[in-house]
Length: 257
Length: 334
Image (cartoon, rainbow over all chains, first blue to last red; front, side, top):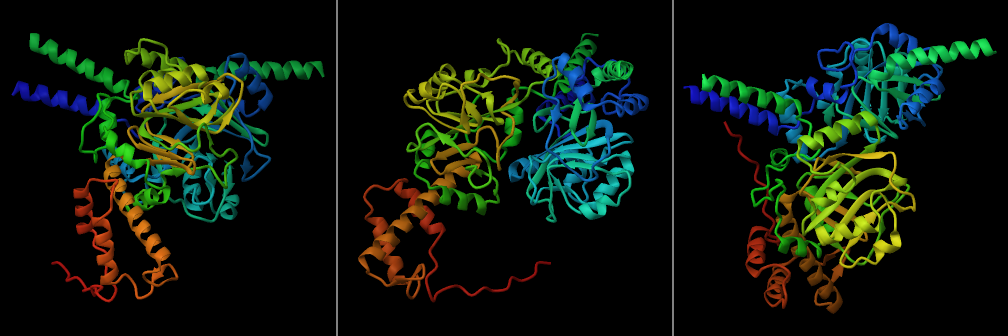
């Protein structure tokens, strides 16, 4: 009996070791962001306070870039966006998703693994990252710049995202229903293009793992700042000192003027 | 008491393993989970061991034949040549020499100090004797491998190898590399014997502000998703990544299609039958079919074993003009 229990335990462990997950475990996210000492969400992501997120909104792209550069982070700004509603600044906590060209063998593994992780079995699996969004999050996805047949969301998913996060999206990819989404108050999108076509032949292979958005490696729980001039991703452990330093720079500039 | 301690130790060991689940070098079990349809032998690292003889025959298969076999199997995103839509189409060291082999994959990503710390810590846990660098994937190459890496089309400061690492790839794999990135020391690389490479640019700069994040995980090369252990078919017309379990059938069907085409070309040339609008007038008749089977029987040097061809022909009989089976509506099963 005991031996049976022991071998069961062992088998369970073995299975856990074998599987590369779709959604990152809290332990993995903590290991990635080990320098962050503050509060975390249940999923392991650093949870920077709403107050600090709001204060980041008043910073400039140059202030943020300068602070990160001095800290050795030289690849945190991505340019060349199409913006749904220019003139706005969007800030929030990052949830990441990686999409890849579909391939039946990889797809079946992703579907089986996603089921194991308790992810939705109704509708397309491209909604899995949207299912986990919470207030103050920003959905950031790598759709490898695919525009035609690469539309990660349309107006219904866009409204769902806004309902959950109060924010919009940042995609190295495209969206559809630009016209309707423009009318969704509070929602905004930084994208590489738009197209009337549906998403086709794409699989979400990871959620809340590090992804690449153009020239930037993005972590789950990064703080993101997006405006007309670019998008910058701030490692969570640097968010507080960065905001304080930027505010000081702002005050000094104001005094000098 | 001893048993209790054992259980506790085991439990902690397991928790520890769960928490490090995201590997730098994907372990054997993960690679097997990615390629469950492969039933043959595997390497110690878990990758399917496609027989050398098949990889050699794969060189003779045309891109179109491979494309058709993959499409029939439901694989639509396995080819890339970067022509027509991307900035940097393939540059090939020796365009006239096709290359086949088994993929070892590597993912490069823009440098982030915090990710670099994680990768180096994780690399130590995985018992890598050296730091994780752009040499790491090259150190594990075996005879018959092809080093496939995604460097996100970074050209300046995106040179994954120079001629030193080029020589190391040649010595390890006896094949070469496929890079969605650039190389340096192009001249030196051109001089390396028995070695070939597909890449997106050459630049004198040294690799900078980029880092290795995974080895033998799924990666993307342009429009294609690549798994470790895929067969690589690289030619001057582009690169195809073929799931290991499909290679055997793909090679045989490719070779058969090639023979069929050859027969057709000969008959068009010798005008034995009238040929119009991409077909023999009157269709593929019994006479033509017997002629073809006979032609196959007398073919001097077949690319495949005669037995394999006979089995293939038996399993895929050519439909004869006028004798097409009428489609009988299938009875509903209760």
